[in-house]
Image 1 (cartoon, rainbow, N blue to C red):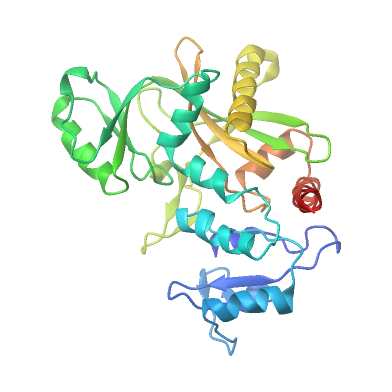
Image 2: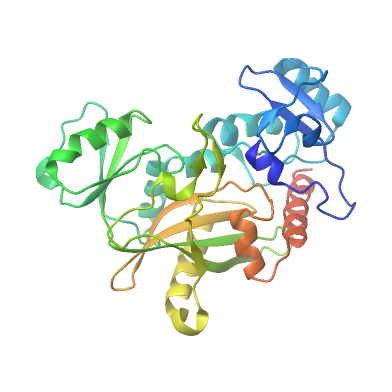
Length: 336
């Protein structure tokens, strides 16, 4: 609801007609022309209504036979939403903004992403080791401080900064609640910077956009509470009030910007991504960038990170969304 409600269904100035599918935790689906007809956007909860609830089989038939969309935009940021629900639309032969399900699986698994990038050796990744569930902990090979993270997990929920041997075991156990594999990386003291990349299917151009820096302490990591403000149910409702970002100034840091943009384009290409990508880097005290992870979610609301970065690079919300729509339609044309 948070991300779906942030999208302006007036985008396109009348060029597009939108329909919304609301999927509930119990698995039932409902369809409306305006999300506000069924969702209280302020309270982020469903309104009482007479809207029809459908099981998944009937819902998919309704999408294919009644709505007949030209393409779909998925607003679920979780693993299941980014992968499983996208696969449903691919099975219905409905083009998706944001590219293939395969790219989502790859990007959501930090170990798989790391493996691809290290194999090609074109992107600077942080030194680290892999631990599988049940493996003995190679304490003699671990230097502190280090970062312990699950291979799968969103919004840094599985990530812990470990400063000594006494804290290592607890951090590993925590990470293993998210996946069966854990990555233990050298901690990079310094800055955290994000770069966005967009691609045009029409021209093939891969454009690296402005670099945005996050306000983090040099001796700490960016935690979940630095990214999201959650309600009493643990659901994200907004950005934290103290979250601060700014754009790197090309007049002062042209070399760093260029290096991060180059590596972002390489990650985009080596992971075989489509449409867009957001890439996080840690920059050490000597100014060397190290790739951390990529994010392939965007609501295309005006305050979405991709939109904010794109607007700093000359796009408007509308022109960015137009590009994504055109990309998805062109991919379908190429298939046929």
